[in-house]
Amino acid sequence: MTDVAAKDSLTVRDNRTGEEYDIAITDNTIAAKDLGQIRLTDDDPGLATYDPGFVNTASCRSAVTFIDGDKGILEYRGYPIEQLAEKSNFLEVAYLLIHGSLPTKEQYDTWVHEITYHTFVHENVKGFMHGFRYDAHPMGMLMASVGALSTFYPDARNISDADNRHMQIVRMIAKMPTLGAWSFRHAQGKPFVYPDNDLGYTANFLSMLFKMSEQKFEADERLVKALDVLFILHADHEQNCSTNAVRSVGSSQVDPYSAVAAGVGALYGPLHGGANEAVLRMLKRIGSKDNIPAFIEGVKDGNERLMGFGHRVYKNFDPRATIIKKACDDVFEVTGVNPLLEIAKELEKIALEDEYFVKRKLYPNVDFYSGLIYEAFQFPPEMFTVLFAIGRTPGWLAQWSELVQDKDQKIARPKQIYTGDRELTFTAASERWA
Image (cartoon, helix red, strand yellow):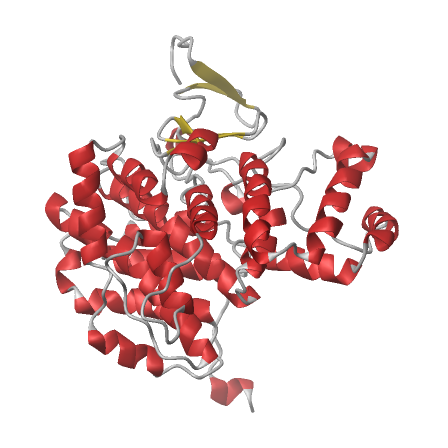
């Protein structure tokens, strides 16, 4: 027990013993280990917090991404997402996330050259990917092939060397579009397309996806820009499920390819990366604007789920949703309007005016419109999460790099509350079965 309570502290009274404890408050948090001093006896393990899903537990300090969910603010390294989406490009944003500041002209040119140079993968990777079944899910292929890269670059285990970390980061960002595009081509039974170093990052990705017999694939610049913006919007999002997976696996000091493969695996789950696919299924099930009122009533009665609205973090508009909604116009100008767009707009309009949804702060999130754009690109739904993973890779790597340089971090090992039996007496099988 502390004699004098500091101003920035929390005084806790243990009603079991009458003892009071002063616990320091730093950055609006208390250190969980400080609760360990609150115990009944010297042999008691002390108090711990119970927080499934880390709803109110900070696992790290980070300078990568700031979110204010109540105000609908998202910033990368202090820069508002709205400005980055309008004025920057994905590789510049990737540099910002990784290095912590915007590049000079020379730094940017070097960065782009490095990533362009490393877009090719070892030829053995092609054989590895051909080994998957014809109907293998692209995310399963991506997860496996990302993890396999660790066997091609055994030097990646030397995570304490800054130059080595930089090389693996460059390789990972460069090769993700290649692996993603090849998983797409494999599912369609088409030959793999090699990277074209004359093209920019996003244009090259589109070429590897859609090039057929033409000498040079040239995507419409409006489509390139729209997909680039989508990559930017997905580049990082604080300590979400997949980022937490990257940090948790990375805390064992494994190579970054294995850590990122864990992130891909987490993103594979329908509660994380598959939400925009669920939005499309919902819109198709509604079918027409005339059916929206009945659908809304179904949501209120608990018989339907309103997908693409609400967010664990945002209690206001998801700022990414507003940007994506604008990108829809450019994409549909090229591809033609998706008939589901009219249903989506009408559904959004009604939901935003309905007291039931307003009271619950259910606003459109990033997934509400992104699926419509991806479908306009003619991506099958199983590719949506692959696109998410390509965009999220710089964020995962920025968080991983921050982790391995953070002296406060330890190998992830959460506590548990044991609820099973204790001190049972074992009876040999010969007696139990007699």
